[in-house]
Image 1 (cartoon, rainbow, N blue to C red):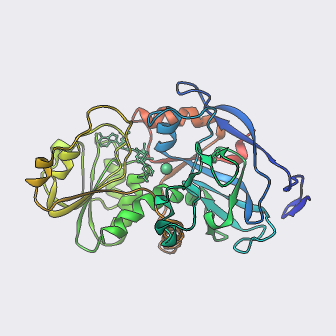
Image 2 (cartoon, rainbow, N blue to C red):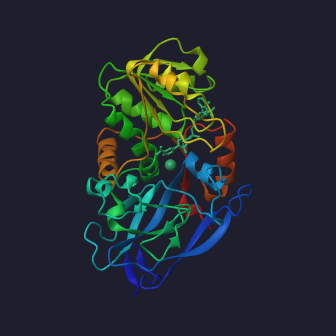
Image 3 (cartoon, rainbow, N blue to C red):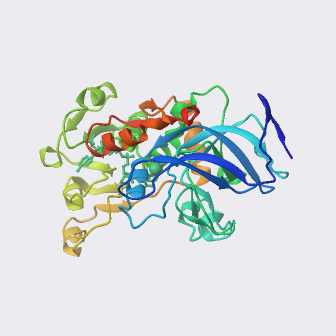
Amino acid sequence: MYFNCLKGICMIDITKRITTKGKALFSKDGKIEDFTFERRALNDDDILIKIKYCGICHSDIHHGRSEWGKANYPTVMGHEIVGEVVATGNKVSKFKVGDNAGIGCMVNSCGNCDSCKVSEEQYCNDMVVTYGGLDKFNNNEMTYGGYSNYYVVKESFAIKVPQNVPLEYIAPLFCAGITTYSPIVFSKVKKGDKVAIAGFGGLGVMAVKYAKFLGADVYVIARNNKKEEEAKKLGVKKLYPSVESVDEKFDLIISTIPTKYEVMDYVNLLKVGGELALLGLPPVEEGWSLYPGNLIFKGHRKVYGSIIGGIKATQEMLDFSIKHNIYPEIEVISADQINEAFEKMTTGKAKFRYVIDMSTLK
Ligand code: NDP
Ligand code: ZN
């Protein structure tokens, strides 16, 4: 069965496996290279998305370079995906051909456990990650991410994106947006709260924007002062160039730091009762530990971790961001520039978010 897409007949038979072009890493020290692979034929509840933009998250680098454990190569990264629905399975009701849709960090879950029942699918034991994982609901196929031209996804794991929005700005919301929106909602940030954001990159800038929008006094803790101008433009009260230079206390600190650091340095900067939300997921290595006394003598200061957000919350975050014009700071690049972007993101030369224009994929 061929199908009509808006701009003519698309020569894709959706009852057969979908040949997909992508960019992959073939080893942890390698460079991103062309990779052609197949995605599953559409199930009744699947949609086929022609990917228009995909953001580059630091998690892509951690995963691709096996910093969290050995990745399965070749691996196609990318979980900040947005594009156009170009085909739908027979029982799809949420989308029609021509709609925009987004995908974040997960593409399936069991649907029955306590977490799934409250749309916290990210905590389901059977959650399927968008790339680099085995899809137990589809013959244990390896998942490949959004550095590619098509994605086949169950409709309930795709997010509805309205027409007439800037899609290149929408893509990063599906990871950087939801990951920072979640703890800001969880910690009930409100007017007058003192909130510090540690790590001022793709996630950090979104955290700044949400906290500012809610009326908090926002600070940034970076590792240098090179983004002082940008911070000022966003209404940040002060950018500290190091954790050692901070001389005040906060109600909430959100850490998006992707490198090794002393967690207690940040606990020490909380007011009594203050909260430290850990989002950054540095490489797994020796030397991370927490002695109980370190927290006991800090009284009721709290530390919690947070991973992305559920599907319901992701849709809510998207609608909220569009309604209030809260978008990431981006630089659009071509598919040939991914290696360069990785390099810049790991050597302090990146600004905020790189977004790949997938129409440049040859
Ligand atoms: P980016 O590379 O875009 O930004 C990281 C920022 O942290 C950069 O600005 C960098 O500074 C800064 N930084 C690095 N080391 C330090 C340090 N020691 N102190 C202060 N700032 C520092 O990364 P992302 O925002 O995409 O991702 C951040 C982290 O969050 C990653 O570990 C990623 O895996 C994780 N993540 C977690 C998720 C979750 O669900 N919990 C979801 C998505 C991502 P500089 O500008 O100098 O390079
Ligand atoms: Zn991410």
